[in-house]
Image (cartoon, rainbow, N blue to C red):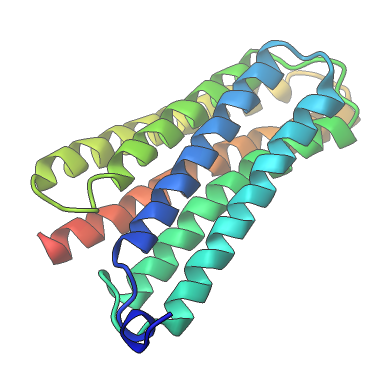
Length: 209
């Protein structure tokens, strides 16, 4: 590696990492949908999600490592750190909730978990499209539209959570209530993390367009 490469690394490396991390998150969202829609072979399905979570951790580590060694970056260091963290957080919540379902010994999922999973997958897919807009911001309106859609999906998740909790407390099985409430809230939190990522992307678009 030349001194110039060390001082001024390839600008594209951060965007490459962001896009790979967003795609990994979207794939984890797709696997989550498959898990809750067809709640069989649960242990193996959860392991597949965990593999993606490990891949995400490696990508995030690469981003932080590149940031620590770079004097010049295409975005502000804080922006790179915030976006990396936001994307990794989505993946962590998908993985963590899938493991909760396994560890809690759920016999089956319900309609609310299925609705949450679809919203998470759709939100992650929108984030992945939005991430690609910051490589070279030509039309901030496209990114703005994606962020608006992610916000809309998060609002829908809030509504699903409200209905899910209301129905849950109509039952009298205390253990089931505790387990399902925990899972519902963590699934909803995954959509919150998608919105966090969208907010970071919106801030980047405003600053760099």
